[in-house]
Amino acid sequence: MAYRVAPAPPPKIPEGPDHIGAAQRVARRNRRIGLVTTAMVLGVVVASVMVHNAHRARQQAAFESAKVDLEACLLGPEPLAAGGSASCDLRVRRRQLTAMATPIERRIDEALGGWPMRCSEASKRMMRQAIELEDLGLQHEADRSTAKLATMKALSAPLELMLCLDERGLARRPHLSHAASLPSLATPLDLDALVAHGAPVLAARSATDLEADPKLTALLPEAAADDDAPKADAEWPGVIHVGKRIVSRETFDLNDPELRASDADRFRPARVGGAILAVWRAGTRGGLRMRVAPIDRLAAAHDVVLFDDLVTGGFMQGTPTLEAFRVYGGRSAARIFLVTSRGTWVVEVTESGAISLR
Image (tube, rainbow, N blue to C red; front, side, top):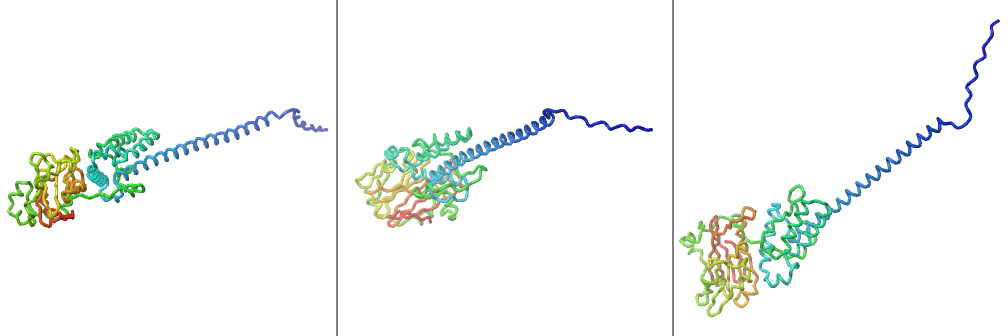
């Protein structure tokens, strides 16, 4: 008779703690904690990077704001014309030509309140922001700008600042929100303006050519009376003799070498109606200037920059384009002959100071 073997009983689970399950639970918990910790660390890192980037962006924006404020201070409220940085350079040049006529005693009194010295505040802000950005290049630019603007030499010295350029080197419009109160600029003639006006009246390119040209006589104005015609002093350029009266040189050059005619050929007075017209080449960078007023009011009259001899082709140049000039007084209007490297043009000036290019 066959016997059946009883199946083995199931293994007995030992009583006591579940070490394997506990270890698995601990491992799962540690993984969760690790994931949460990693996520938190990454979040902190990302947040820190975002905060840093935002802070740097604010610093960069503050630097750019100071830079465009510097542009607005230096250039004035006029809209920026085509031409990019060249246009900016010329506008700074025009402001310099205007500001150079500020008497020296007023420059000292105004100190940093005068143009362009007051613009150094914007460049100082540029410096502070460049330090925060830890950008040595920007620090150098801002430091150079501040040094150039901090003295009264900036009234006539070339500034050579990087203006009206964005980070890609392209021209941009200046920020003008703080410039509404700045004075408007006079726009002097230059060789570009003469060429754009039309062909020169005479082909003369030197004073000798002009005075030898038989066509000159036909272009002279109706002469004024000779008995009170002003005469320039040959030994002291800038001094005018009108009868027994003398107009001092300081009336025109304000004791500033940059406004002073260096020789008698560079200062020419004439009579126009009842007024005196004085025309002179000022220093090396002051342009061709004029004043027109009755003799008693000449000292209080403003300079008018008639011609900028350092501009051609839309850029500042080191070589003057004006070879010489001659002034002929008249009963109702005087005529100024601008002898340039391209020929001679004629400017007419009335007793009231109205200017027209013939």
